[in-house]
Length: 400
Image 1: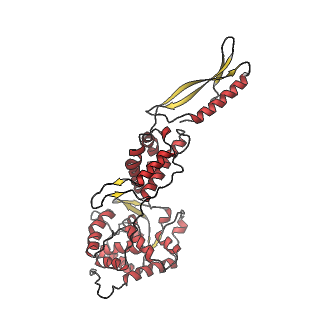
Image 2: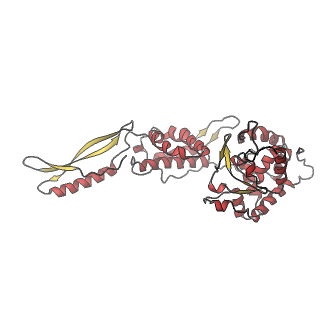
Image 3: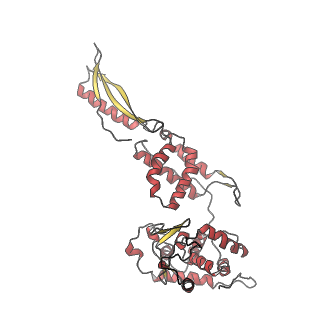
């Protein structure tokens, strides 16, 4: 809604008893989003007790009050505003993974529940009960997952954030006076399962993998890199004792220069136990140019993480008797847990690149701190030298 200034105009009516009347316009939108101008008339006072300038002041006061109370969003639903105004502005700014998450929450949760509600009728009660129901919703069984009750804190919080952002844009567009989602509170949600792979199981899994998969898994476990970073590595990213994040991959597409955050584009320590494996892998791929991927598919495109986990990791994990899911998040969490006692929490943060501060080029190209290198090597060596208790067999496979 465009911002307008108007003073209106006043006129006298009546024969014997003269009265001041004021006129002004209000601007509303219909269900199709088209703006309509509508006339409003208002009684201001009798001429006997009010001069014209006083009538004009009174009219300006009434116009100001009416503009604040005016239900500009009458007839406009949350779905209309989201699809016609919010998404065209915001969606092009989102990274692919963020776009998938945000659109999933909008299409599967927010719009099915609140989409048909007019913006003018959305209040804090409707928004908060939406979150409460999301935290307690019955989720049907699918594939190998049993029926569950309620979504996780992450899902609920993402929906709270997205709903707040949509309605904040509606405030900026002057379609509603205030944001009813501004002070929403996340309801109680089920505790998230945060699996950590025991050392002996991690050792068994890594030893049982063939060379290429073992190298990728060790990079995930000890370099603690995200899947998009691992499968976006090119030979130019390998700097001997560390990887330099130069881009990421997403859904089989290479994204040069892209990273989760600016702080993610930092050097990543390669522990001593992995360095010979990377060198051996380079020797096997001596003809590959520097811009080639470290771990491409047969067609030369980035590997899709979910496919690699399903085809190469899950069967070996099941054979090793590992019941918990083995994925990149579990491996990163396992590293952070095993790192306790080997270095400071700041060292762990640096290695995982969990920073909210935007890092400049001068910062992320600096030499890798020696304390972080000591930490990474200690964790890698601790796992790779773990011995099974007497009588317990560790599943192994010879690396070719």
